[in-house]
Amino acid sequence: MCAQSFRILVINPGSTSTKIGVYDGGNLLMENTLRHSTEEIEQYPSIIDQYAYRKDGILNALSNEDINIQELDAVCGRGGLLRPIEGGTYTVNEAMIIDLKKGYAGQHASNLGAILAKEIATTLNIPAFIVDPVVVDELAPLARISGFALIDRKSIFHALNQKAVARRYAKQIGKKYEDLKLIVTHLGGGITVGVHEYGKVIDVNNGLHGDGPFSPERAGTVPAGDLVELCFSGEHFRDEVMKKLVGHGGLVGYLGTNDAVKVEKRIATGDKQAKLIYDAMAYQVAKEIGSSAAVLCGKVDAIILTGGLAYGKEFIESISSKVDWIADIIVYPGEDELQALAEGANRVLSGEETAKIYPS
Ligand SMILES: Nc1ncnc2c1ncn2[C@@H]1O[C@H](COP(=O)(O)OP(=O)(O)O)[C@@H](O)[C@H]1O
Ligand SMILES: CCCC(=O)OP(=O)(O)O
Image (cartoon, rainbow, N blue to C red):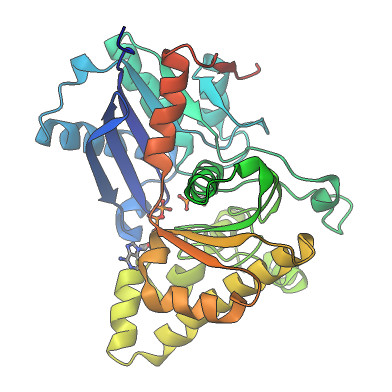
């Protein structure tokens, strides 16, 4: 008897893009990346206000590729800033939608994944899922200590892609993910460096709220005392400072764009400031990888570099030249997120796994 084949629409809203794909029986029928400039995104006061803009983009892309949405069996979105939960595939439920709409754990484009999936799925009377949301939390107790007793460190990162590429690497070398010690670095609109020890991400920088390297649009760690002074100087409003840290931080703050391709072009035409800032981003990523290697006592099976910025050859070279003494470096440009979403939904639809329930 043939295994049943399911047609699944996957939706991955990122800070600088919305990526979609349609899979049938595990085969990719179409994929599309809709890029969003800072100016486009800025028209919307909050993440939830981007809903119709992103939904229209998705439905237009599907229609341009002659995909008949009536033939879909499920819709699976990237999971956003929910309560901390274990990894896996979850049915989108009302409790999840409520948390995402009110921004329970903050604002990020991934909050739209479940909402878009549910909305499209409801009109078609089919199920909606999320897989490995950005709040997957496997931190070791030591990694939770920030040094400031009122604030714990949190696990907010590219869980879906980090896990997917780590598994891809394990398969490629004929080993199990659960038997490896890896440092996985996602280089996207946000940048996260995860310490994967035997299948668990025991430490990772909080890629959203001011921790770790700066990124195309986030400030990462900034000097805390200076930040406190700035916040209480009476010259800045709360939302303005938050925006300077997340959204208008990193490359946007220094160079006015979240697009690394444009930055590379400026460097090629001799823009010294662009080169300094781009080199500094690579420098901070390398430092974070170095400290992650210390977590694993230097016993690292491989360093994986992935995400959109990993297409930039000189950027990757700049990081690699500082950390290649630690372990082999594997570069997987782009991401495996769409396929990981499709596989997660497929495991549930085929009965291989039961969907987890998000707690209310
Ligand atoms: N070919 C490329 N060379 C260098 N940088 C690239 C390339 N393609 C995309 N990028 C950059 O990657 C970043 C976005 O990465 P991506 O993983 O798609 O992020 P997100 O999922 O957060 O939207 C952007 O700064 C974009 O300009
Ligand atoms: C919220 C952590 C994940 C993240 O930064 O995603 P993007 O790179 O898509 O913004």
